[in-house]
Image (tube, rainbow, N blue to C red; front, side, top):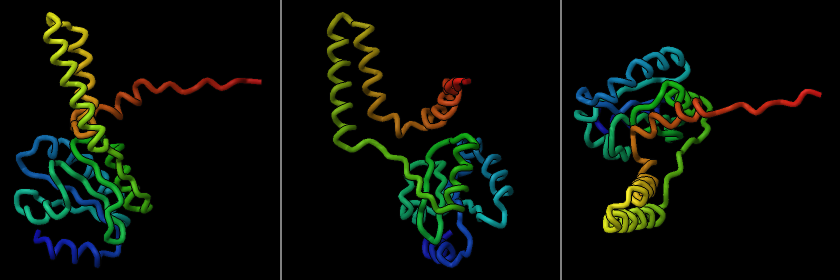
Length: 178
């Protein structure tokens, strides 16, 4: 789809829109496709679901600020209200449709560039120190954790697993009976 045609169609559309940026060769894109199709059917008539092939629409993909696929973006009134990058569970994808419907802005905060840089420097320092110390398994493990903490928000595997881990370890608090 051409960039100009997309934005014109988006601004003239009376309903909110969820856009799936995908490519035929992308395995994560293919993995979430059934969930997106199902959600598109559930929200049919209330939220429009569009697919954009990243290989065929490079100008559009760049103008939307998409750097990796799959990327799913929710729009309401022509304005972006939410975005998810990487393979996501159906619950997270459903939140995009809800955000498009309600207009509740759901941007995920990321690390500030300075925080990211400081974590990378600290992790690299620990890595060097751990390697020179014999190598020290403990320091090497800590350096791995610190380095991962600098990039976890961009890791598609972590984004796919973190909601599942949160549900797995979430324990409802006991209520007191009087």
